[in-house]
Length: 404
Length: 200
Image (cartoon, rainbow over all chains, first blue to last red; front, side):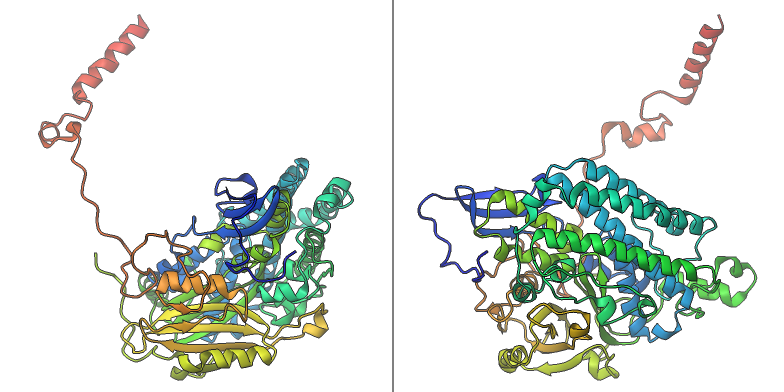
């Protein structure tokens, strides 16, 4: 791998060089990524990812929506892990409001549960599509079956499979429904066997190993220089995980390890993600034990979180609060905040500026995929085009959040 | 169509950290554009090896108008376990920039500044000096204007209405004739005949 930064001088048009546009409809680019490749024969001389095909101006829109409405937009960024995005946004706004300590414990635990479930679901999509890129079709079906169970849980809690909008500023939209815990127990029971099958299909598979070992190698120094976070950084040996480094919600109450590898290649990132799925399940099992304790799931502050709908027929104040929150939202004191969480792809963060209005003044997302994808420019030159597919897959970009 | 955005309330959000005590999530500092690059170089030498993000904010009536916000993180450059990483220090460097004033690029210090700076150029129109490849990244190449500026409208101009199709002409509606041209009575008659045909 070339470690020198790309400058125009390195690129030469002499000899057999040829420019090839890969994407934006290429199936292995996982969305709408276009890569302008300069190739000599089969090997890549320069790779320049072109993004922006999915740009929908989410950040601009959020400036014009209430704080609570912005959350629905935040969920649409990383569409494979909506709950992580919603949680990060909610935590940032809660920090600005100064109510971080007042979120009920049960809500914190359920938030942890949701973000770990989405992590597993998101890694399932990654593993399935990564397998398909390399010609292993059947992994996809096993992964999507597992993901289906998690989407069922999401539907039960939030009412929607893809964008549940269940995590809200101030808590959660209602308690877990009846029957949820039983479904969760079934998932916990099913998970170890399914993981054994997934590992059996790929981990020791010689074709898979040939395609991924020593492909897309990234040293720890390179990873830091490119701002890579998440499993890609941990695959290079640095155990930086926001859940451990800057604990949020109730992560400090649970036992879990941060899987790392030092090889830094696509196979290392694959193993890190698989281990991470098992660690996530370890957290989920611990959260499950705490779910039997009933409690409130939202902050008891009608100025921020609307009181239950049933109470508006009984109480004048509840009706007024409901009306105020629906018609003009709540106001957030001025200030700025940088809130990060560990999303499935890495450090997902929001930098939010408030000027005291009922709408955010500016919401800047730090999408992990954007920076993880960018390192392709340093990683790809000198490799084969076929390996480029492996690299994209092992970085796991989601274009909803790259382009926003 | 003019923007529906409200201008910031007078003076309140001009400098968020000065309005109220900063939320303790990072070391926060403000520098001038002239001192920006030297400060960032010093921070990198100090161990802030990872550039997390560069963000832009437009405080429209204020002068200087923009803020460019650098988020840095102290990160080891070699393999490290959880204890060695610990709680790394975060740093937030804010820099006020006037409209049209160039900002020195830090692409040579942190390679991932490339796309971050291109995005700010694309959406705010802030120019980064010595950037190798400064062009639009999210918007189309031939786009005019910078969408995240506060004076940029949220919606585009209203489109011209297409002419109404013939079946929706006013005279038809006034006569009580549905778009198909058949009256209700005619339809009822048709249904009745069909039913009669079936029973026979």
